Image (tube, rainbow, N blue to C red; front, side):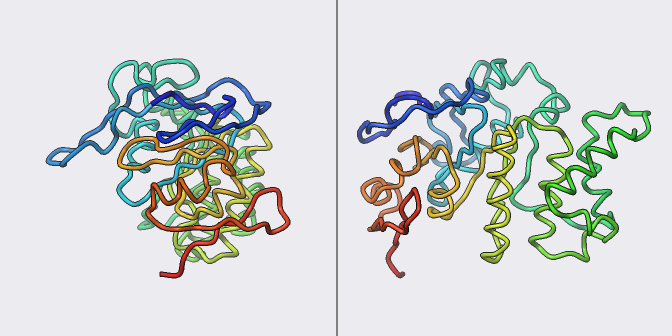
Length: 285
């Protein structure tokens, strides 16, 4: 399989190459070359010789059925799983040359599940995002407090600053966790199913926030399940199937019936809803 980049003129698929478009985006900020991963006692590879390139200033969505390797793929970039040498490159440098503190200054992570067995306030939780920038015995500076304030403004959590994190809703908590990641001053925001378990209103609010962050120069890499959310908000889709990239490229050229059927084994239709991109109709189960 060929390595895939969003600024190539073709969509890279295991099945066929389709025409694509050029985008005015920067150089690759993350690059994977021949990643493979097998968990102990696992039958088969979770990731199987996977290669791709993610450009800066884009909203990249990782899609695929359950068990296709989406979260594992994300964790390799975050170095939560140890990659082999010369397989993952962050800002052009082998990720193994970074320590975790260095990575936290570049990538803000929003995990799938966030434990809340604490009594922290919202502001205290977001302040944790400054820890990669604060020396061990240094006090919190006015600059740190300013960045936390700005993170609360962007995530619309400023009015919750003194609330305990157990006193807020699931949608509000998700914005707090994103705020904590933003306080890290990341160049990349990596999120694992950020809209999971949220009602439609909060799902839209989170996705609109991520889209706005991309406009402000942050690269977003997001694992999602909802195909229509991916269609409407993404710049690039990486569609995984059984640990390999089945197809990657612009959403309107990847999320078409033939590739949805190949990966998800369901029929689908595209309809025009008066927007730039179509809506995907899936069968009732």
